[in-house]
Image (tube, rainbow, N blue to C red; front, side):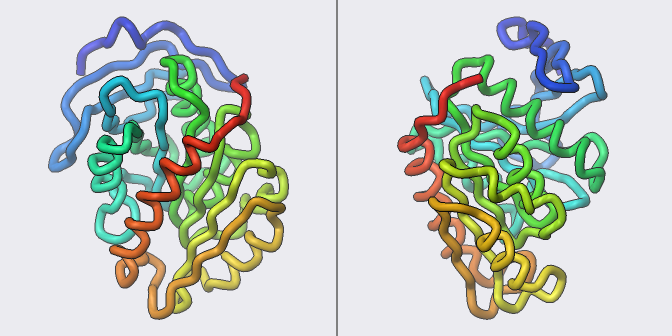
Length: 235
C-alpha cells in the first residue's frame, strides 16, 4: 500500500487517533480500493468504493469473525458497486480485534471520522449479526451518523437503540434464524424510538441468503433515501 497524502493527516477522535491512511489494491478476490487506517490502537483494514464527486457514504461491518463480505453471499461488495450510480460511496470495514465489542465500535467510529474529515455528509451504517450491535452503538455515539441498519443482530450492545432517535433505525431479521432468533430483532425494535422500521423475512436463516435479492433491493433504496434525508449536524 502507498500513502495517500491528501487523506493521511492526523485525525483525532474519542479514544482513537488516525495517524495516516494508506491506499493500495483491495484484498485478494475483492473489488474496490484498499485502505488501511493506521491508528493509535492498531491498523484497521477496509475497502473503499468511491462514487465520483460524492458527499454521501455508507459503512458496512460484518459479524464477530470480521471480514468484508457481509450476509447474503457477499452483499456488501455488490452494494458498494451498485450504489455508485446513486452517488453513494461505500466503506467496507474490518475489525482489529474481532468479537471484542468496545474495540470494534472504535474501529467503526474511526471509519466515520475518516469520512467526516474527508468531506462526506453524515453517513449510514449497516451491520450484520454482531455487527448489528456495533452499528447501533456507534450510531448512538456519533452525531455524524444519520441512520442505522441492523441485520440479524444480536441484542448485546444493541440496547443503545433507544439513543438513536431521531436517526432512523432499520431492523431486519430472518424468521428461521437459529443462531440469533428473530425475537432479538423484535427486542431491538422495541428498545428503539421512532423513526424505526422492522422487516422480517419468512424462511430466512441467519446469513439471510434466502432473502438476499429482496434484502439487497431494500438496502439499495434505504441507504440513499436515508442519506438524502439526513439532517444530523456534524461533530
